[in-house]
Amino acid sequence: MARVFAASQHPLIRAVLNRLIPAGDGFPGAGDLDLLDHLDGAACSSAETRRMFVEGIRQVRLESERRHARAFEELAGAEKDAVLRHVEGASPRFFEALVSQVYQGYYSHPTVVRLLGLEVRPPQPLGHTLPPFDPTLMRSMSQRGALYRQL
Amino acid sequence: MARNGLADGVVYHDSRGEVREQKARIVVLACNGVGTPRLLLNSRSALFPDGLANGTGLVGRNLMFHPYASVRGIFPDRLEGFKGPIGCSIISQEFYETDPARGFVRGYSFQVARGLSPVATALGGLGSQLIPWGSDHRRMFDARWDRSITIAVIGDDLPEETNRVVLHPELTDSDGIAAPQVRYTLSENSRRMLDHGIARATEVLRAAGAVEVLATPLLRTAGWHLMGTARMGSDPRGSVVDGFGRCHEVKNLYIIDGSIMVTGGAVNPTSTIQALALRIADRLAREARNL
Image (cartoon, rainbow over all chains, first blue to last red; front, side):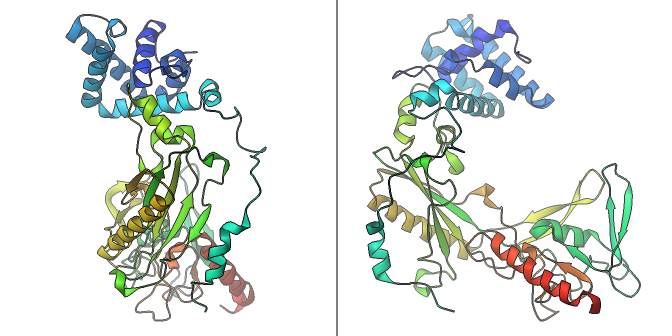
């Protein structure tokens, strides 16, 4: 359930996310995944963060209209990037938080985890199976002897 | 404080903010390298106008961290590093001891860590080498994901009186008690030590086949080992506690944490603090009646 961003803002936010991590090489763009709940959860972590995200997204909308008199999602790729670079420079705290949250949501999303060749599960308790350790790797160290001081 | 110069208990704020007092025959302080001097410096009285057990002015001084540089090698092949332990896969103390030819005293440990998770890769790990957003993001992520090994250079900071914990002149906690303020400057010795470590780690990673090496000369967030601010010693003029954590100036006040360490070493301090705790607790158990 979205709490910070209205449904009417979702197309704009998805378009922003697809410029931060664009689709390619068989991977989806960040805006193609269901990251809005993740982003919404991060944005409502405090009243200050909420204000920062709301204002930051508003800046993206206003800058698009000011430059091109069109909605952000209707702009060409390079135009979108220029708007985002402007907002990144004008509101670095917001933009840094946005990028960080998008990366966290995207790279822990089951679709992306699977595409990276990982199992969609926490590493524990199953762990990973490793090949047996090759003790000959230690031969040069063991032949060298101790380097430390004996007390 | 009792009039005889001994501690007679602890005054504290409970969860509702009310002031309470716990009487005690022996008081043990264990708030580590920042919390312990903060509490002592805040505990002023007629007997100890500059803070409890602080007649020498040494409480809060000689703060040591483990200055930390990270050197990250990027390799052409996938390494499956995510399958290994996160903290430290290989440790080396090849450069731990003083060698005057290196231009600094004491030395450092190498801790070799596995590669980063997908999220940490994108965010750039401890070194904050963030993968840029935008059209090149995909390519740059692929070049780094599961292809990195990090060597941490963990230095042996020297005790210096100018590196210290003081009371903040304005900032307080929710109970109105002065907050600590940390004043720390990386010394020239520690800087040379880290630079030496970065150069050696770069050689190691290049020799192992790294195609790119990313160095973070000093990790700002790595001030996580807090030591030295109530140092141990046999001379009451040059130390706060004796060899068993007992304050020279308050005979029934003990300190058991990283603040009593005299040198920092170049390894994580928890095991040493635990060993000190066992040693001092054994002594307390044996001799509490006679203190």
